[in-house]
Length: 368
Image (cartoon, rainbow, N blue to C red):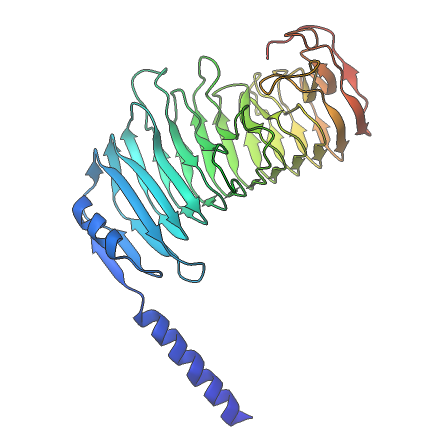
């Protein structure tokens, strides 16, 4: 038995040594050196960007790792000016990229395409143009099965979503995981397009995205009424903390989403909101909503719908489960049925709402 164990350990040690021997770490200090390293990169390699900060660079990475051996690109420098990063890859890890005190005219600060990529420990900080109307996204996800984790997005004050999931590609899309990130100090915008997080668009809202948004912190994000804008189906929002944000977690389009075990605190912001619901088959369970304002008329607002809605209109709320939520000291009603009734041809009240909490109806008009 001892002899067999020794043989097993020897084989395992040889396998580990072989794996290490076939993994290369490359340190680069210039964009040209980075491109050279990318062209020769193999699964398991680590590319480290070191030296002085980079300004006004457009980085394009085309890489392909494997599930067992992802390719990692680490940055120990900051990117400023009009710098941006475009990744097309599979099993690639972007680690430690920092974009600060710069701006773009359009596009994306970081754009990730392909499949099974990860953005971790990255920072986008005050990457703002002078004109609030200038629209670009901070982080855009295309493709499928990406993860964004332990990143910080701070100080956005221009038009464009902080983190957006795009579903307008052919083939498999979505199924991303967005977790353990910190979104903070998103200044108030002047209309639509100032969301902190959006999954999908009106045009793709009937697609099944199957994204998980979990254990993120949203703090003082005041961009617009839709702090989180769900515009797709089958997403899960769980165990997030929302503090002092002048907006609501909004299921604006799409069906069959789950909003559970989130902590939403108004923190004295009279424009803060709770959860707003549009569509069919959602579950709103186990959330704690305390001290929010009346931005959406109540802690949980079920919107009024229109007959035969187009994709950009309000679908009727149907077959929604509301259970086990804790609602404390909120400015509006606990649960509002018919938010926005009478505005924009919205005449249909919610149907088949399963809830243990009394429902309050509103008859006045509301803006969105």
